[in-house]
Length: 559
Ligand code: ATP
Ligand code: MG
Picture (cartoon, rainbow, N blue to C red):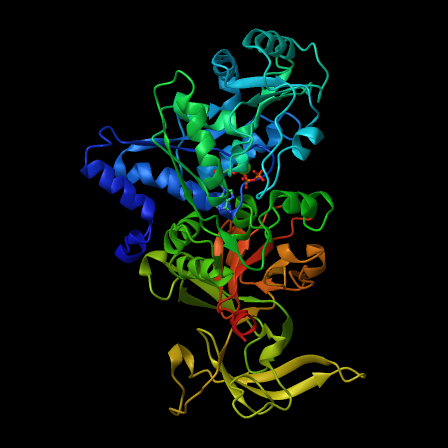
């Protein structure tokens, strides 16, 4: 996390905690929780929540519980639980000894629900979900009380027991809080606390026939765990009175403080789990770990360092005001991190052959070059120069415009770390397609000099054609080409057709063979790239573009 004083002051929750410690309201450190529902993979929005929830206790002493909010057996799967744990660890947060499940508390939550009934604060309603919805009222009109609202405590206890015993069908009964059907806050109009479900739960099996809803589960789980600050996103602000109502009406002596903050919204992407599910299950992307997705797994596969994501979360801060963050901010954090931490290498993505006609055929000159221009600790490597090399097709132009400081006929350019070369001849096939370039090199021009002191403006990257390593490069870009795809009628129509361009003719320097999955490099002049998974049978080496060298979207975004 950055130590930038300005950005730290933008976190109002940090302020609250600082003041509580100063006034002795908090004496033994703070306890927070991160409560994902195991029904999908974590995404960049969750990263914001994790940085806050796991980050604060690191500053103020205390800890954060990773709690799976697993109260809906219909949608939850073990696969997600494991993936979430792996993602939390990858981001660098430790939940050892602090791993919980809301389902661990089913028994206690049930007992507290019975307490509410005993105090005439909850009742069993026989109305259907639809009837309950229709009688809830609107912002301007009060709701209608259920005909079952005034059942006796005894009858409610019996009915709730029978719900518990699995004696009723799904949808036939619910348990509702008895609060106020005329409350201006619709959340307080006798909200549903329990519903009947006969689905098998991935942890508790078929033990339960009733499952508590979020508003009952969350506050009780927080209190059981002794959470001091229950930090959630703004949409729960209107639920806070219910959070407090439940805790005030049961015999539990811990009452965590719910504080809301703005959820992360990024342009050019979607973070709704429903939409992410759709992209994955309908095959628009290649699984939850597709490097174009804003999932933590996708970002990891793409080569985003965990530290860059945390830096981003620190920079955007925590506020009460909802705003859309430019994806360029995240990309810049990645760029800055990789500029410092990625070794350099040379790769030619779209090669055109160059023959150095005056370079001896059998010779290989091994040139020693730094792995990082600003950090000697990265060490050095040797790259081979041979008579036949590749350069980027776009670095040669037949009729170049004025300031084209690359190669054209009769012009001279410098090979990065190598010699100056002059194009003498352009070889074409019968159809006029460019086949190769014949160049001469100036043997006196090594080490950045020239034999006669003449200046050479352009420098281009290159690789040996004979000793180079053939690789596959995926040019990855933003998945959507609309700023706010989520608000479109059909967000799928805004998928960027160029979000994945496969280049299978790329050639890299031989050392790239040694790269391991997840290693990132700056391919000089091209961008940052990350070694991908080894999937194909024939041992293809794949690199995914993590981010371009410069923000190419800025013009579009701000025009
Ligand atoms: P849903 O409830 O629709 O399944 P969710 O995004 O709320 O989706 P959860 O798994 O419940 O997913 O989220 C876990 C935690 O992460 C919650 O505390 C939630 O507030 C937080 N969170 C989720 N999305 C964001 C976001 N975009 N910005 C900040 N926090 C988020
Ligand atoms: Mg949620």
